[in-house]
Length: 487
Image 1 (cartoon, rainbow, N blue to C red):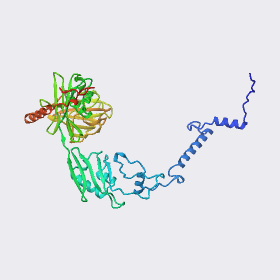
Image 2 (cartoon, helix red, strand yellow):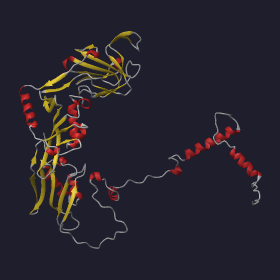
Image 3 (cartoon, rainbow, N blue to C red):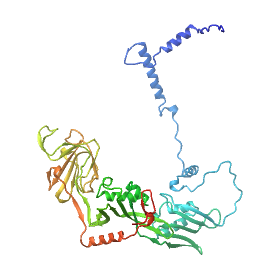
Image 4 (cartoon, rainbow, N blue to C red):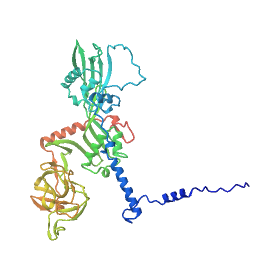
């Protein structure tokens, strides 16, 4: 065993130990509300004053710290700065300039002039037709002239973003001038291709129509494990399936009433160009075969309103009163003691307690006859429905509806509040029949549109025409399978 000498602590000077003890016991955060007048209190006041003075010294307007703002960039300087950055690709890199060269780039003393340049440009989102040509090297005057020629055939704003333009730029007189367009071709519409060519020094526009087959597409299949998955597997787009489910939802509860052995049937607008491109439009027909029950829905317009009609010509049932707000019933219709005034009087509606700011919706289709402040009702909205019926909504925190506007059932017209004579956030809901308030709990009115006469004949003719379309085999499937032949 080794015998090591004992390590003795190094003793400092007595004044150093005293200073360290003093600093350790020093209270840096002094409570100025206690021991007022003591040494610690005066020391805390001095520290607080020093900190405030330091903060004031660094105030932006302090003379020694002020600095002049740099002068704004000129237009030329701004364009030069943009050239050093990455232009937004969503706008098609609309600076039209290349990034500035680095020191590794050595300029050529001379380059040969190319007689023609073949290039492709893409119309960006929010871009302009003439701007695409100018960025490609076409002069502004010629770009405007070509845009005017194209605008006589199709609206320039109607050309979809992402359209590719194949162009050929010809020889220029000198390098200080822009190259002229020798040829330009692009797909202006699904059924039209436009070409601009230079003939004898003059630009000519050539239209090339594209044959398009507009036969609607019919998609059928068995529901199987799920209606959405089965329809997608059969070839329907998500947008088509969404519209189909919405159409069925106007008649049945899809999640409850649709079974695995049921067969879905949908017909959509479909266009196929001679060049091979396809385009799917809106849903035209929605069918569901449940064995004993067969549903056939066709979208039809009557009196300016488009809705789904059954094969019998019966339209959607509309106008059933729905709850104007999500909440609990806190006060009913009839005589009651007023919570603010303190005496009994007749309550002309029903109160629904709800969270402040909850949306209030129209109970049925109607026209806004009043929207504004209405005495004890506070912010109040009144709707006029057909058949002498009306509804009122009071104590809103904010009104959305405007007088004279047409609202549909379920549309937000305001938000729950506590304006007027109210003790808390809630909705005061009234129903009128021929301007007389009635109990809202007793009102259940319904309107159903019905096709008759010549309109019903045209409707059934269109229905027979659509249902006679044969199913393409590859678009008839069960969830997880494809290629099932049409039944």
